[in-house]
Image (cartoon, rainbow, N blue to C red; front, side, top):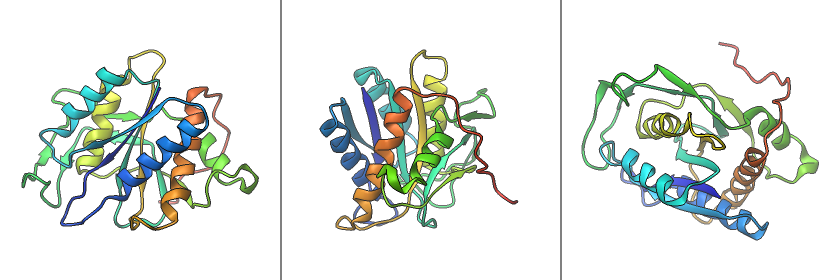
Length: 210
């Protein structure tokens, strides 16, 4: 079972491309004969982790990919690190703006993604693979808003659960009718398939210069 999540619209927007990509990727995976489901998370600090945990308990997935919107990016961001820190630049959809608070009190400072990010990056860079015409990168900051909170909560909940691969992906802003939704969905579906049976990560340079 593959679980994909995206967020409801926030910041006055009418839609959220993370949810559109999650839903499209789930359809692609089902067409490929895999069990998959997409679900919406609230962009609310107080409730997003609980909604996620409820989905995990109900679905019992083998792969979980949470998706979020990165308004300032133009590439698919395969997130590597979730940090135990909240510092909201803007308020969430409930009007709350936590500053300098932990995601989980007493939790580890950070978790690494459990997804095969470098294998996915290699596959996405191969034009013959047909995994979506998108630019992708491994990102080493998932921010400090609800996206990072959900990423950290996901890893905190699943890191000790055998047989579960989980992580987070940021998508750029796209309109609902944008063909980029389908391209990004195919890329996310490719990551999910790799996560079902991950092998050793390739020795692929994907770090930053700063």
